[in-house]
Length: 373
Image (cartoon, rainbow, N blue to C red; front, top):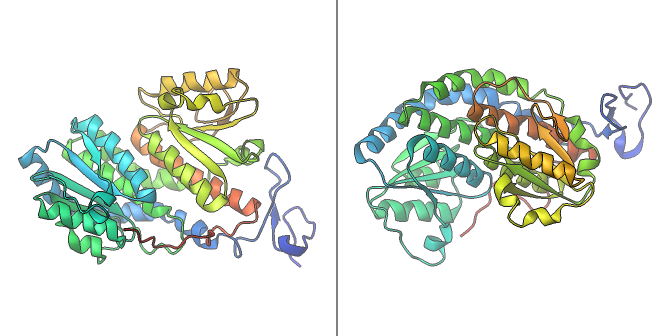
């Protein structure tokens, strides 16, 4: 029998668990060796992945930026599924904000199901995928290339069919990711997009913040978000809000709660939430808000205050005077700070899944590589 941290013995399915006395209620976590060992190790590898990535990206990014500066594209088209689609949302925000170039999300089914090619001559087509093995993404990239687009893949498996189908490969360099739910590959997708935009826009502030990011990610992994394991997540449904760069984080967090915690969560922009979904809110309705340190921050703060007045149970990241505050690192750069938020959230999601007795490394009905047409 294994002793818990508090000294008492735990029996039955909780044998080998530890009691986290600093949490707001008595929570017994199943042993990490049995529940979530893979994902717990992998999400902590993100800092090293980001360090490696800069070297791997240097040459292909120079080629891509050379094309972009020469052709001055009218639009960037992205194509992705799952967590990678949320990374594409982050890329849309970055490219439109710093370059002023519209970003459109391609529907893979237009090619794979409806067999229609898009007119993309001279425009960049950016596919994002951890495995690079989903047929609809490969077919979409091949169609875009045939139409005259310059195709690039942000991908972890650089020998995958998607990588082979594209003109340029931008390696995530995250290393093998065995756990079904993506963590370090999502982070690596975000930093690849930050690197791309920093070089394209010649933004030295983003580049300098990227240099500091690995150490900050390591620190973000250790932040205590245990307040998020209280009544806010006892409900069967919750809403997650973001704005600007944190909208992508809200969407990724929503997916992770479904994937690894079996909790129904929906993500909205703080503005879009007020156009109808806010009617969901009643007393103690749980809302998680990913605050942002740029011009969108004031709007999210107003939304948080309004939800508190309506009686919602609000969790807010950062220095908030409304709701329950989740700790964050000292501000550095709003866009790289956003990446740190999802790193802290991953730690919370893993612990929450363990609390619910879920083996986070083996989500029900899911496989590591999802292949769709």
